[in-house]
Image (cartoon, rainbow, N blue to C red):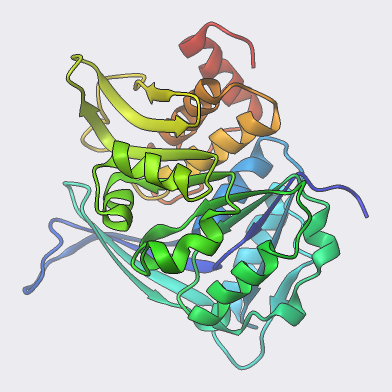
Length: 322
């Protein structure tokens, strides 16, 4: 069995993205644009790594429909190994409806479909154990959450675990999430997620995640956060040694930037740097650069760069060869 550097395990969804003038709680709005694209948080990150030439695979489930075929086809086109994706009969492929407005506000509605049918019997421990990194993202159902907890307790100690919990897992609370956190090498959250999970500001929250077992905590800060030192930062990274603040390429995101998938892209860039043995701050810069590419296009994957594109932009930003 050929070695695979990074394996994803998470929900596989078709994203149905609706652009609207304003996301409203009660009322009517006109849809200004609509597109249907492959998605799923861990799936997007693995796709991004594959585009950079990393040997990748994915473990997940789809239905026997056109959406499932589209998800597998998109992975194959990027070079992702799809041999561990299971097709579940008589159920639809998972989908997510995302409403986005001009102010980058979002409302997300998930229909899990086949994702809820993934079981331990569908997964090969030997397949997972060949990976250098396993990247996890959330499922909607508790059965798959418990499955992930069970799996990370069974895989070899040499396999690093990367986690993007999202709001589904964050809403479970620290106590429920702690079995995953204590085995997590690097966790990716946005500011709202880490502050909701820990009940503290993102800096103190990152420190708390470290005490629970995470080795590295990466917090994305959206359009950017002005610090008391007069700088703007788009990501905050904490490990046992020190804090790292990632400055944007430009001051904040452009108003027309598309935020969907930016966090998944950042995770791909960070993990790419980690696999290449880069220092944490370099990994953060690679992550921010990947996110900058992603926000230029609608959807989570269309804007993701090739290795040559990433290398050129990284050289421009850092003055260093990738």
